[in-house]
Length: 532
Image (cartoon, rainbow, N blue to C red; front, side, top):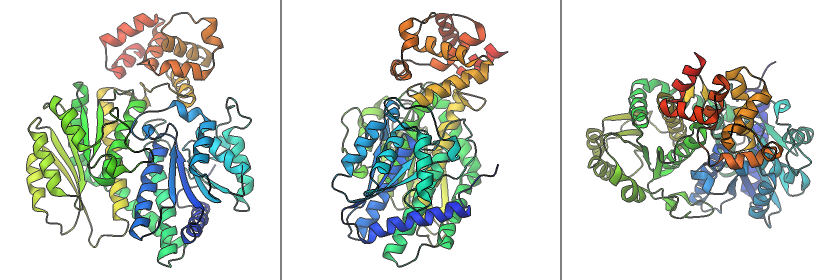
């Protein structure tokens, strides 16, 4: 079977059609809106992209036309909020709220695996009201692999929604963009390739629409492919800095192995990417909230998110870092500065000096264009154990900020993934300590147990439930409950999958499995010991 790629003719043709729809709204924005939406990483990237393109409109003295929704609301931008992904009615409600009073809405729903019920609900709403909404689905699975499991309380599945969209796509009343990006390096971790492809495709579409609307540059196949080529070159940048990347990865891994912290201090949109990468470590690796933290230069003033400041539970400015985190740091904690030549390098230097008062374990990732001669950069280099300086050709392209962002995303994804590999959170290429907090992750956990143990699915699900409820015998109440009840209980549990696997491999009780994991806290080593 052949798969479409990001540059396949059909994918590029659909990107052009969607860009032309956006162009129409940009030229006549009255009562119109472009909405980007997703769960987890997809929703965070929707926020990042809408923010960037609304700023571009502001610079042209035009009103914003972009908005975003994310399962779990703005808290999900900076923390793990997995359960709302299973709620299609919440998806519908959030879309209705931001579109109230609008007569024309282009909706771009992002679901890498074509699986999120939250997004399925929003697409269903669009299909119910074709006079207002034009739905676009962005994902990276073939349509026949869209999730077909029943959604509680609904008459539709994700696949049934996709099938109706396929029929409407023939008349351009709906659009599906679903190139294949191949398997993830960490199985199921769609924050990596899926997330990067999401960012690329959204920006290609919106950039083409802006060029058409404001510089009279028509949306063409050549323009789309030229933009794609610029991103392809960007993807190669991190691989050209293996030595610098290795130094950062080793430092982060050592900090996590010692039970200490990794702190990202970012400026501008790179600070948003720092927040995003840190937030993903909790559900992906079963990390503690404090293990990897992100902070952004001007805090909520920089973000301008829908709900504004989220209160004391979500401190994310550099000032918050200085007051809340810095006093407890030592040389075992890693701090990474993430910035570009367009940021206030004096501010970077001042913060670097404050950090060095508490820890020498300071590093930097810095983007510059050839010819940049910032004097402060030399001083920052001297304060850091390592500096990864990425030099871009001059003259700078119009896409430079987006390229900086994509390159930074790749570096941070590689850094946090590699650090957790070193900590022992990955077995082969599987997330061994993933949180079982929604139906997708519950099914993934069951499949993972089945693959590693070789036992039937029913046995694996039974072991998973025993680990969730911390019992050796399942009661009727447990077995008769639905998946949402199980995932609700699992939210307060740690090491659910490792516990279940140890029980399956050894036949021991849940309590004995817990003792084994206490004696061997490196999960990969504990699993290997049971398998040997």
